[in-house]
Structure formats: structure tokens, C-alpha cells
Length: 219
Image (tube, rainbow, N blue to C red; front, side, top):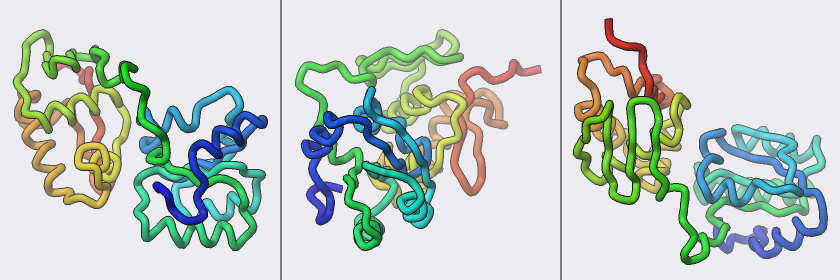
């Protein structure tokens, strides 16, 4: 939510934060707040997550029942959803800040991001800077989008990842075609699985996928 009406800037949030304890309301799935931009926004000694909501309708009820200073909306929500929410929140008297991780400035030049760090999880080792993948000690060649998916999965082992979170991460649009995601999952499985029944990337129909980096040994 960049430069939207009724939304104050990140600099205003920093001034507000320095004034003392800030109570947060997070709106969106838990997975949506695990990226670096979200962590930079919601973590800190003077920040307290006092409420969470998985929908904008529930969030309005939280605003009325709790003392909230700052609302943080995940990037799962589109512009057309956010405008009426912001209007309704203001109409009901909420005067605090309403931000999204997209409002955060990028990292300072020269700062090494988490995505540059090697990943070791279960049967997988990823050398992120060189974009190379090893499974059980054997290197596996991946196309760029396949590598992005594997890197993201390895950073979120055993988590149930929604279609929206994966589409947002890989295509930058939570409303992108799920067919593209299914095709990518199929291609990655073909590179990492040795059986017809998937063991590493499990499908949870109607929701998304779970990555199991250390499945039980085959009988």
C-alpha cells in the first residue's frame, strides 16, 4: 500500500514507534508475515502483537475491541480490498497507522540479505549465491523459477504454504494462475522425487503445499 489515501508514511511510523509501546494488529495468513520486509516492520523491542486476523471483516471487530496503534496488512490483499477497509476503519474512529510491508524502504546498500545465506535442511543443501542445489549429496540442475521455489520451500520446511503465499512469492501476484504453480510444482517434483508418490512436496487440496525436507525412509 504505497502512498495511498488515509495511510501515513513509514517515517511517521518510526516517530510513533519511538514514542513508546506500539500495539499491532496483523491481518493476513501467518505465512504472509515471514518474509524479510514483514519482519523488519513488525519486530522490535517496543512492538507488541496484540491481535491477529485472517480477514478484513474480523479485523474491524478487533479494532473496536482492542487498543490498536498500528495495523499491518499482508500483501495478500489487493487495492480494491484495502480502500473500503481503510475507509471503514477511519469511519469507526481508528486513528492509528495502516501499513503494508511494501511501505518499508529496501535494505541499505551493502547489507547482505538472508536470501544470500546457504541453506541446509533435511536432505537439501542450497548454495544461494551460486544458485546450486544438492539433494542427498548429489547436485541437481534447476531452472531459475524452479530454484526460486526450492529456495523458498527450504526456508519454510514443514510449513503449510497457501497458494496465495506461493503465487505472491514466485510471481509477485497472489491472484496469478494456480495452473502455473501446479506446473512448476510438477517440474520440481520431477527433479527431486524418486518415486511416483511425492514425499518432499505434499499437496493439501484447497489450500496449498507442505515441504517435508526429511521424509521417512522408503521401505
